[in-house]
Length: 269
Image 1 (cartoon, rainbow, N blue to C red):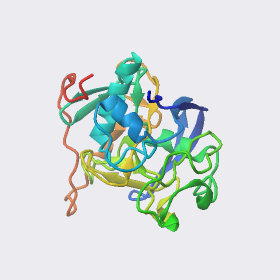
Image 2 (spheres, rainbow, N blue to C red; image 1 turned 120 degrees about the horizontal axis):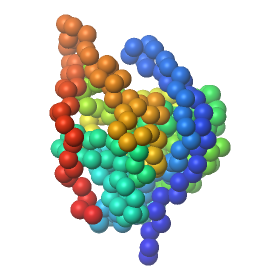
Image 3 (cartoon, helix red, strand yellow; image 1 turned 120 degrees about the vertical axis):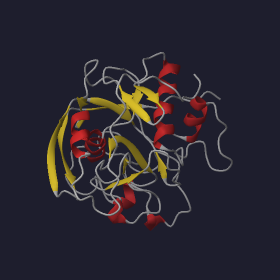
Image 4 (cartoon, rainbow, N blue to C red; image 1 turned 60 degrees about the vertical axis):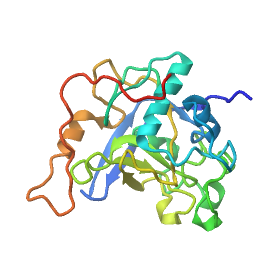
């Protein structure tokens, strides 16, 4: 049976206040309109694009999990090629470059994710968790099929609960090197983790049972630009400058290699 590509919904332009607990700072981010998946990528969608077999057990409509950050960006490129559109990423080893002018599938920035999750609301969640999210309160053994709980006002399902979702951004490059941000909470998380503002992070190659991804799509900048939708390469470099002497356990992000990246690992499409 043919597998439908991700259903994308249009998210209007707006602004969102992002908070950073470690630095005790906040910043207001203005966003242009963009499109994002109504649900997390499912096991069926993942297998159809990657060419891999679906895992035994569970429903094809369960979110694809566990998924690493690298796996998510490779999937985005493969899905873009299937649609005949320019991929958003070039990949060279662990270095991933985002072309902001590309029309292809991509991971949302943290600002995009939070704005899309909140859907114009300002509280910790866009509704009562029992109505909108699969959490520890449901006493589950794993994630549930996507889209079974109530959607938010933008038409997005499961942005809270079910599985955590990768974002494009580095989480804290001064402290956690190349760790990427995760948002939304999962099926085994208690209510305080399933809030629109909560951030989690992990290594881009970490295999975590409660992690999947949702995709955005479309250009948000000019060719060669390095700042859009709440993210910028310059800000990443500035945040990676650690304080000295280096606190125990901190691993600042090393400078990225110079020169234009060339693509390597991908799904073979």
